[in-house]
Length: 110
Image (cartoon, rainbow, N blue to C red; front, top):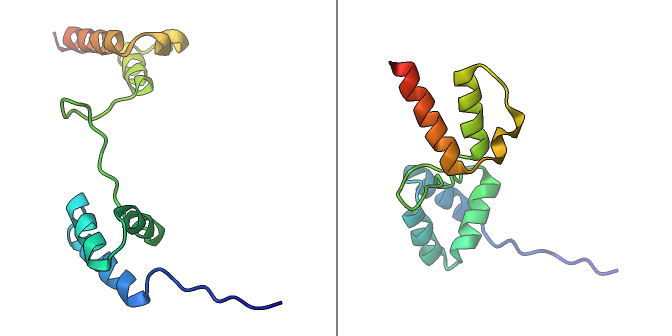
């Protein structure tokens, strides 16, 4: 059998520079800048930063810019506010859950 040697995509120097640059300014623009400097795709840069344990994904937001809240989180907040467990409440629409939570918090503030 013949031995095959694998050529790494990134040298140790490239990884060190990439990590340091990203940690100085951890955002998408830095990833784009690194991809052009290192002649690699942005997906490759992100994958390497993930493997190095330094990549920070951008927080998910809605079209309005508000953070994404799962229905299960809304149900948990409602259950905490009411002090009762309602297992089928998660089947309600997200809009209804938000309205219910808003109503509960308004009533508790009075």
